[in-house]
Picture 1: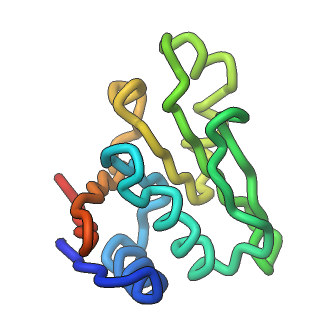
Picture 2: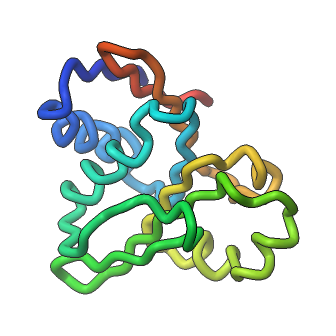
Length: 136
């Protein structure tokens, strides 16, 4: 699946289409260069999911937990600053990724071998237009 986004205003519908394409999936790994739009896309996905909290990059905290209007948790990871796999074990990644809740992971390259089976891998690329595509 490959979606094209011409402007930020198109992100919510694109995010909705991505979620519809993977209805049973809960873990999404987002790949892309610095500034590609991973956090911005996750903000749009969270809007579709009904998140009521402010969505922002967890670059320093590593993980943010948001709540939806129904009280369901949504987890947002940023592993950019992870240098050793042991750091991921220290935060108890399994509790999150196997919780059945939505989990969105920026910079998943460091934990590729720890991602659960069925993880949806999304690549974001482009400069003027953003290309959002599943890469499996």
